[in-house]
Amino acid sequence: MKQAAAKHVTIGIGGGISAYRTLELIRLLKKNEASITVAPTKAALHFVTELSLETLSQNACLSLPLQTNNGQISHIEEAYQSDLIIIAPATCDLIAKMAHGFADEILLQTLLSFQGPVLIAPAMETHMWQHPATQANIETLRNRGVQIIGPDNGDLASGRQGLGRMASVNALFEHILSALTPKDFAGIEALVTAGPTVENLDPVRFLSNHSSGKMGVALARALAQRGALVHLVHGPLSVAIPELSNIKSYPVRSTHDMLEQVLELAANVQLAICCAAVADYRQAKIAQEKIKRSEDTITLSLVKNPDILARLGQTSPKPFLIGFAAETANLEINAKAKCQQKNCDLICANLISKSNPAFATDDNEVLILDQKGPVLHIKSQRKDCVARLILDTVHQRLVF
Ligand code: C5P
Image 1 (cartoon, rainbow, N blue to C red):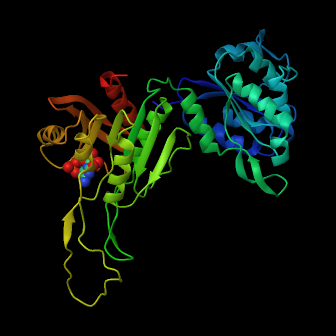
Image 2: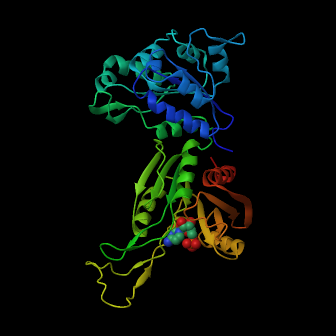
Image 3: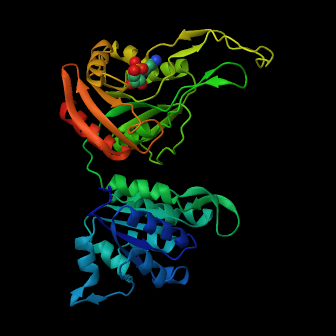
């Protein structure tokens, strides 16, 4: 099931040029199975049409104050049905009206009737954003619990560059999912390692592996959505890191870099998930010049890298520690032994086969074990669902 399934989101649109980007947000939420009502202001309808909004949302717009539907007052019904209201773009005028309780648009009437989470994505020229009146209104809304997303620096409607551009559609989407998720990891600081590490051979060549970082990023995202502060230590990733302020990214390359960064963070975290596909060996001596293609065969002299997970298992106080184990045979026996040897609380084991390659794919099948044996079998599904199920098991065992 998609994360936004069975959720109803009201999308308010103000009269700004970035309204065209909100169409993409509607599409993204629909793809994630949310039901949507769009409430454009009168000014918004100069920029986008009701036809586009209704086609994409597959629902009638709320655009007229005091609109009724089957004898029901629409803004009251919408406020009762909605799980979340997001306003994108939130113009200067709309922000001022929200701050002062105006109700001359159906969107504003709905907001006044609504008790749930409200997110706004301001978008305007830099000076309008920085004006003390706008900043005072933003402060009023923030103190009232409204979540302010952005604005970003970038291209503005005037052709100038500066602060005031509406946050990216992906950032809005991530914040919506986050706001819809119960915060059962609030107060937890977590460390997640993800992706491959890279060991240089010479200035242009390296040893690495096929890890995309998808599983680690899915875990970081799910933890952040559930309220944790996440330190994501990662090698080069093939996926984007979610634009959430409670995910801190620490890019590294080699296993040694990763170990150093992890040990620096370890003392402050209560939970550590080592998902990275760490290079087990490195070149004994990195060549200063490019290795020439003169010989028919060359020999690499490799030395063993430190085991980051095992090192974390020896720290005191030790965080609740989770490792990953990719095995090609004897999954249960090998994974249980690894859990014990590395002093982990849990191991997530993948049997690597043709049907479950696990590396660089969107799906994964996982057997969770503790030092005594199997705890939960997660059948093959999308890595973001697997991440949520792993965290459910962690939540049952982690002492808060
Ligand atoms: O021993 P093996 O490599 O199969 O163990 C995999 C687990 O150990 C993963 O959680 C991986 O992130 C971690 N690991 C590590 N440092 C290494 C090798 C593996 O943290 N050098």
